Image 1 (cartoon, rainbow, N blue to C red):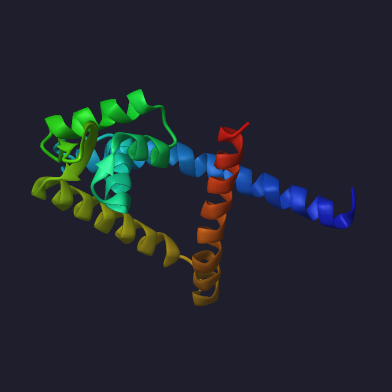
Image 2: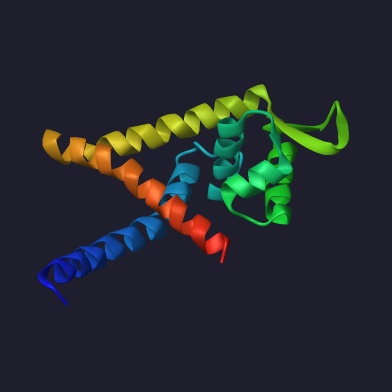
Length: 160
């Protein structure tokens, strides 16, 4: 290995450890939110992800939701059904093609999504506040690039 490769490997190992820790912490953050009364509807992380995906695409077809979440269509259907049962989204047939189901927010769904986003922003703010201004700017610049790289990697895996 070259010196550059050694540095890349060392950084990759450090990053992988941090990523594993962050992924393990996510369910605990949701549990803490439930305990604090935020999650009186009993939402799971996947439910909030589904709300986020619907917000990204607007009135959404089930296939778009599944694709955006990178899950099997039956998994997306189950997630949407949980949200329908909680009154956060509605389903209706596409007017021009009755075979297509569209999913839309209810007022309660938009309120829950807004609250979830505000809580995530508050958490991100608390985390970033631990870093210098320069490091905050670096993280703010690099994190979206990392998210894009992860998305591209997942797309590559989906196509193999």
